[in-house]
Image (tube, rainbow, N blue to C red; front, top):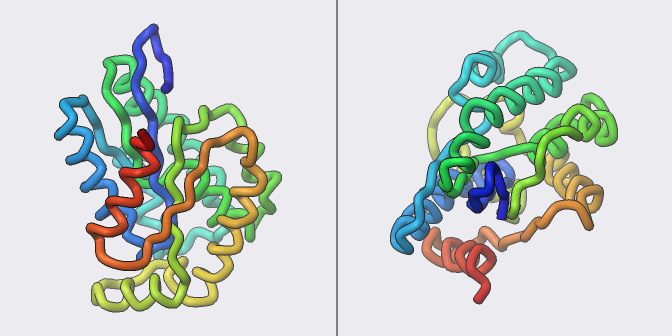
Length: 202
């Protein structure tokens, strides 16, 4: 558990490729915490703070990939200071839809994994990072089924590159981060049961 000001609460990140079901599982995990009588707050990265809004506006915009590691690091610092750490200090469990592992996976191609990790070295690791494991083709099929405009990361080639980036990031974080890979195939209910099993293993 993360201890902030003497208060214990859990900081959990859900990660995975676009289309792997992260938002769905975050909603179900929030409901499971509430069913256990636990205070819980849900957030996301890019955040809904000023830098996060800029990032979201530019994901399909003109900024080059080399700029994003710096923007994400700035947003993460602000997100931690303004949202995550105050919630943990209040005793609220914090569930975030993406955190630093996404930066390691998505941005390593432009800057190299070591450099992206250095940009994020001062940020705390979550108590648990859940990596939803789903093959890139299935993720793309789900993305296409939404019928929404796609951003720069939502192509099969990019998804394959990012999947390899997650593999490299998990290895690089070994021994320092608690990361649980969860099979994201099957129904949302089946995946939720696997998620709950790693959040509450006893």
